[in-house]
Image (cartoon, rainbow, N blue to C red; front, side):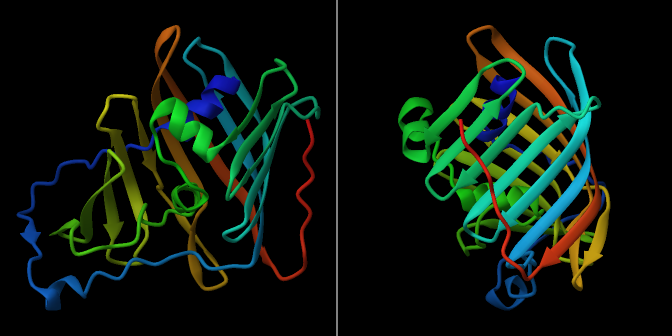
Length: 245
């Protein structure tokens, strides 16, 4: 299970489903300025939901996930299966990824620099935040490729040897499908956000489907994660993020 969490952090890939409508390639500055992706804004956030993890070995884990965040500072989470005993606890900060596996005894305690040196992949807290909140992966640049297809923008971005394809709704400016591929063949991840909920007058993805494919010593691994958020709150008061190995 702990390899699954690391695999998710080590790959970002999003597949754009084909559309029969004729695409309009945006080339002029005036038209490209019409593209206005939205970013989820908050100070502190708490989320509670249900999670189902289907691992490559056929094992399925169902439980409750509690999630806390301070914007641009930390993401904290705890996963508890049906018996009420915590299985995993994690904390992701600007510098480090830490995950405690209480079931299997495996831990992750790596800086982003260590991840980059070992796996040749440049990750960041900003990138992980954007995936969770259905933001576009990176800030939009005129070097990116942008296409209008019906009620969607299709955005292609390449950063640090990773290619990202985002399908962004023209209705709310959020990513609804995201496909990221490591150009060095290290893995892919497909993310789908089927529904959004109004939180503080902002769209927030209350359901998420992740399909992760990554390499491990045992070979190619594929896992599926379903998330359904049942309570989402923006809070003004300080939150705690308890973690220790």
